[in-house]
Length: 356
Image (tube, rainbow, N blue to C red):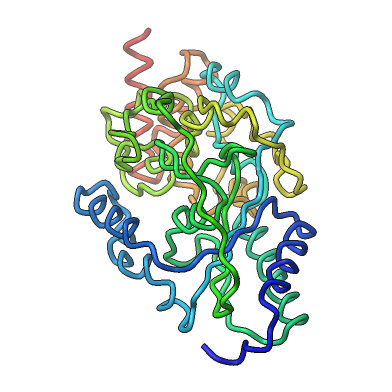
């Protein structure tokens, strides 16, 4: 690392923090790159097979703890968070209780956060470069193998809770994370201390028992994994536990006491779009592939694709109260071109026949 000897690094960090606030970030911290204990934890998690179909986790395992291989010369990680809680959305508990509605994780109700954060982070880094001169950096928002929660903890943004999400004392856990890898040796922040104490509310709250121990998540049972990352059939023994959750799951966060301090999203792009905070399952299931593409464009849900979106809704319809609208929607797609969708539709119709 050369060429930064004449830079006032304290002032550069102050400028970063001020500009981050102006761009809508709610906190910024800086950390060094070494996380040996987190790397060990990741390797043990992979060895247990908890990553399921996410083969990329194993392929990039070593890289996740070596940001200097992603950007040669990296010595610091600038970690940021941005609140996303959509205060105007229909209350989560009310949607989960009404099985005729579909529940979508609160983070996905607005625009795709990847685009929002990546654009703001790129501007943040470019603004600093204009002030101090060129420096090496790379912006990351789930776009590179980075152990973002470990670095955010070390940067002082929060601690990793027993549900494995990051929690901040002043903001709960309803926020996104992003990083700038840089060769600037900025002053580092103190790591955040943990404040879960004896609370374990998140563990029994998980509908599928995916939190197998404090700080240990079996993704193969996690509803967020099953409805988003998992590409094949949802295991039949877990389908009933999915309830009406069609994209992600927030149950472990909904019961976390620290979320009483959560703040509503200030960024307008995280406002609810297309009434996705409480959509009728039967209506969603009748969307065509073209309608899905048109309505979900610009949303994180778009990357899921129409087939898996339909798979998830079929399961939720199987868990919904029997009604003409529900069974009619399922019957309409009994002969769906996708074998994956057909399988889940058949399962759902069989559930309703047993009730009838």
